[in-house]
Image 1 (cartoon, one colour):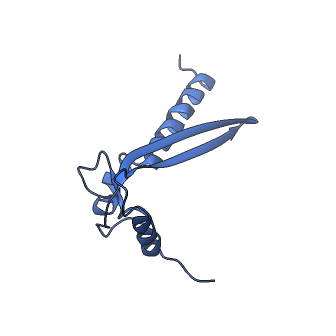
Image 2 (tube, one colour):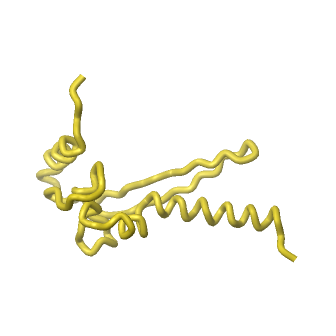
Amino acid sequence: MPTVSAEDNNQKLLSKLCDRKDRLACFRTVICLLQDGEEHFFEGCCEGRIATFPTGKDGFGYDPVFIPTEGNGRSFAQMSRGEKASFSHRARAMEKLEAYLKTRVGAAHPTA
């Protein structure tokens, strides 16, 4: 079975979109918490667009071709980890999970 690299996947994506003007995209993460038999879902989304060519050296996967709306025109691969994490889809999903857990802990352990 042939090994496919992230670069191969990026090139395939770019070739599929080569004639497209609409290159809007988003990264989406959904975290599911199973608590007391109930499912709770926390979604994070980062809007952006697919570039016409890869840029940057950091990150992984589609980071070199994904330009988030909040990234000042830079790809995720051009950003530091901390910068990317400040508004990534994963960070947003985790923020929602954290807020939910804080309300649950606060409700279970009220302060006097």
